[in-house]
Length: 121
Image (cartoon, rainbow, N blue to C red; front, side, top):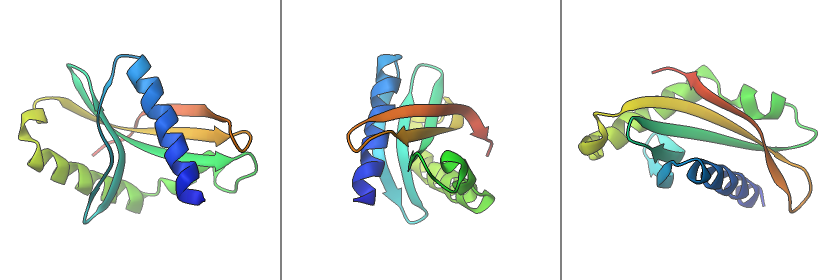
Protein backbone atom coordinates (compact mmCIF):
# COMPACT_ATOMS: atom_id res chain seq x y z
CA UNK A 1 0.00 0.00 0.00
CA UNK A 2 2.75 2.49 0.96
CA UNK A 3 4.77 1.72 -2.20
CA UNK A 4 1.66 2.20 -4.33
CA UNK A 5 1.08 5.63 -2.76
CA UNK A 6 4.71 6.58 -3.36
CA UNK A 7 4.49 5.36 -6.96
CA UNK A 8 1.41 7.54 -7.54
CA UNK A 9 3.27 10.57 -6.22
CA UNK A 10 6.23 9.87 -8.49
CA UNK A 11 3.95 9.44 -11.51
CA UNK A 12 2.32 12.81 -10.76
CA UNK A 13 5.68 14.59 -10.56
CA UNK A 14 6.96 12.85 -13.72
CA UNK A 15 3.86 14.00 -15.61
CA UNK A 16 4.25 17.58 -14.37
CA UNK A 17 7.90 17.61 -15.41
CA UNK A 18 7.07 16.22 -18.86
CA UNK A 19 4.33 18.83 -19.27
CA UNK A 20 7.02 21.46 -18.62
CA UNK A 21 9.40 20.10 -21.27
CA UNK A 22 11.58 17.76 -19.22
CA UNK A 23 12.51 14.33 -20.53
CA UNK A 24 12.17 11.56 -17.94
CA UNK A 25 15.25 9.34 -18.30
CA UNK A 26 14.64 6.96 -15.41
CA UNK A 27 12.10 6.18 -12.72
CA UNK A 28 12.98 4.25 -9.59
CA UNK A 29 16.60 3.78 -10.69
CA UNK A 30 18.35 1.50 -8.18
CA UNK A 31 21.93 0.81 -7.18
CA UNK A 32 23.67 -0.38 -4.02
CA UNK A 33 23.26 3.06 -2.39
CA UNK A 34 19.51 3.19 -2.85
CA UNK A 35 16.97 4.50 -5.30
CA UNK A 36 16.73 7.68 -7.34
CA UNK A 37 13.00 8.32 -7.70
CA UNK A 38 13.16 10.33 -10.93
CA UNK A 39 15.95 11.35 -13.26
CA UNK A 40 15.07 14.01 -15.83
CA UNK A 41 16.93 16.25 -18.24
CA UNK A 42 16.64 19.08 -20.70
CA UNK A 43 19.43 20.54 -22.81
CA UNK A 44 21.15 22.15 -19.82
CA UNK A 45 20.22 20.30 -16.62
CA UNK A 46 20.23 16.76 -15.29
CA UNK A 47 17.80 16.49 -12.39
CA UNK A 48 17.79 13.91 -9.63
CA UNK A 49 14.38 14.27 -7.99
CA UNK A 50 13.47 12.81 -4.63
CA UNK A 51 9.69 12.51 -4.26
CA UNK A 52 8.01 12.33 -0.87
CA UNK A 53 4.29 11.56 -0.81
CA UNK A 54 2.38 12.13 2.41
CA UNK A 55 -1.20 12.24 3.67
CA UNK A 56 -2.69 15.37 5.19
CA UNK A 57 -1.77 14.54 8.79
CA UNK A 58 1.91 13.64 8.73
CA UNK A 59 4.68 14.02 11.25
CA UNK A 60 7.55 15.06 9.01
CA UNK A 61 6.58 18.40 7.46
CA UNK A 62 5.12 16.87 4.27
CA UNK A 63 8.22 14.70 3.86
CA UNK A 64 10.86 17.41 3.96
CA UNK A 65 12.24 16.20 7.31
CA UNK A 66 12.91 12.81 5.70
CA UNK A 67 15.62 14.36 3.50
CA UNK A 68 18.28 14.08 6.19
CA UNK A 69 22.00 14.63 5.60
CA UNK A 70 22.40 10.82 5.57
CA UNK A 71 19.67 10.50 2.90
CA UNK A 72 21.29 13.30 0.89
CA UNK A 73 24.65 11.51 0.98
CA UNK A 74 23.04 8.31 -0.32
CA UNK A 75 21.33 10.20 -3.14
CA UNK A 76 24.60 11.89 -4.09
CA UNK A 77 26.43 8.54 -4.17
CA UNK A 78 23.66 6.98 -6.26
CA UNK A 79 23.77 9.93 -8.67
CA UNK A 80 27.54 9.51 -8.99
CA UNK A 81 27.07 5.87 -9.95
CA UNK A 82 24.36 6.82 -12.45
CA UNK A 83 26.70 9.39 -14.04
CA UNK A 84 29.54 6.86 -14.18
CA UNK A 85 27.22 4.49 -16.06
CA UNK A 86 25.97 7.30 -18.34
CA UNK A 87 29.04 9.40 -19.18
CA UNK A 88 27.23 11.01 -22.12
CA UNK A 89 25.20 12.99 -19.54
CA UNK A 90 28.20 14.25 -17.56
CA UNK A 91 28.35 17.53 -19.47
CA UNK A 92 24.97 18.60 -18.09
CA UNK A 93 24.76 20.61 -14.88
CA UNK A 94 23.37 18.41 -12.09
CA UNK A 95 20.71 19.41 -9.62
CA UNK A 96 19.05 17.65 -6.67
CA UNK A 97 15.38 18.63 -6.39
CA UNK A 98 12.74 17.52 -3.90
CA UNK A 99 9.04 17.19 -4.70
CA UNK A 100 6.58 17.03 -1.81
CA UNK A 101 3.28 15.48 -2.85
CA UNK A 102 0.12 15.57 -0.76
CA UNK A 103 -2.41 12.74 -0.89
CA UNK A 104 -5.72 14.58 -0.52
CA UNK A 105 -8.05 11.59 -0.85
CA UNK A 106 -7.53 7.91 -1.63
CA UNK A 107 -7.48 8.73 -5.35
CA UNK A 108 -6.26 12.34 -5.48
CA UNK A 109 -2.72 13.61 -5.22
CA UNK A 110 -1.37 17.13 -5.67
CA UNK A 111 2.07 18.68 -5.74
CA UNK A 112 2.45 20.52 -2.45
CA UNK A 113 5.96 21.94 -2.95
CA UNK A 114 8.72 21.60 -5.52
CA UNK A 115 12.15 22.61 -4.25
CA UNK A 116 14.77 23.25 -6.92
CA UNK A 117 18.33 22.65 -5.76
CA UNK A 118 17.08 21.39 -2.42
CA UNK A 119 20.66 20.42 -1.55
CA UNK A 120 24.02 20.39 -3.27
CA UNK A 121 26.56 17.67 -3.84
